Image (cartoon, rainbow, N blue to C red; front, side, top):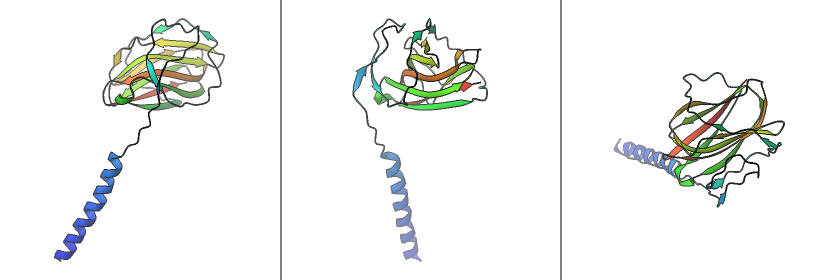
Length: 182
């Protein structure tokens, strides 16, 4: 009986130890920091930060014409409508400023930004439509808390090719999710 207890204890410790080891071992590969690359016609005229560029999707449409930039006003949404498309990106404080692109390739009417797990500091978002028109949303490097925000309304049901975001986690980690509603 005593032998069975000892063997059970050893097996439990071995299984628990490997689960803990898997949870602790998180390999993060960080690329070099580079200055944010923007088109000469990019509408924001301020020094942009050095960023870690996350590999993104193949971009089908390059920005052709920049519309007047929109200054972000933190319009919090209490309930999020059912999204036709959504994609998330996890940010870590150690990465600092991160430049990432999300492949949308869908038609919609509203774009929402959801911040979860912790606060995020946002620089800008660049929404590129299928015809090359590009809408820049300027966050002025402000920190935004967890929540869902209305990012952009385009009532004509435009097709969004991709969205580029420059942001960083203000806490240990954060998750940024974009939702496109048709």
